[in-house]
Length: 239
Ligand code: FES
Image 1 (tube, rainbow, N blue to C red):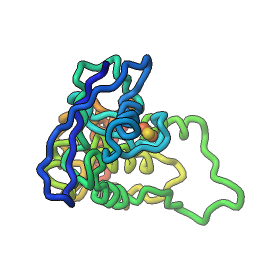
Image 2: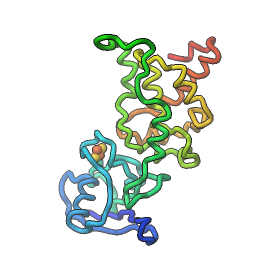
Image 3: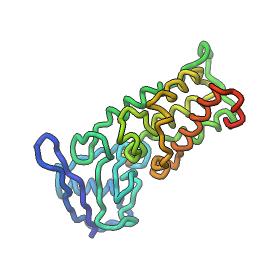
Image 4: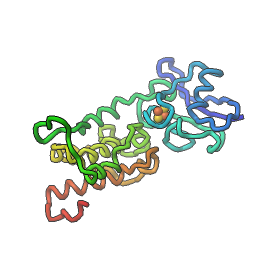
């Protein structure tokens, strides 16, 4: 028997937030997401949560499970202490139960212009990139925008306008892309008072990333690039 304690809240019905307990059958290999589906289909059809791919690709099932922001579809119940306590991502308005309103998260993401801005007229056929140029993107490109880093970041908690680890990691992904022509524009965006210099280097985002990416390291790299723009003699720091 697996025990779940799940956060329940519906702002529309005026009831106060609470935790509800459920008992599920023990099924080998069952994930937390499958547990939530069992609750929805067999025990309580009013439970709300978000998911799509069920294989750690879409990023929509990020939540707070036993004290850690992670993906419900990637977390096996057998690896967790019981009761398994499930809450929504923090400091985002709750729409219902485990479903949060991600509007601010996406607004911050849009602010860094998350698309290639070519320097010149696009080539007739395709952009070419050497294996070395492409390799520079590897540490950042796998972000699935699940918001686990955003939920875990105390700076985002204090100031929703802070761009956040997800947006800053993506900003570096474009700054380091040899096909992009908007490096100065992007660095100017992340150098603003809602950008990289608000990061307190707490490493929460790095600890929780389900793809093992390093938003804290990306933010530090952006800080160096901004300094080098102002003081080119520091170029040796930008590796
Ligand atoms: S459902 Fe897509 S990442 Fe979990």
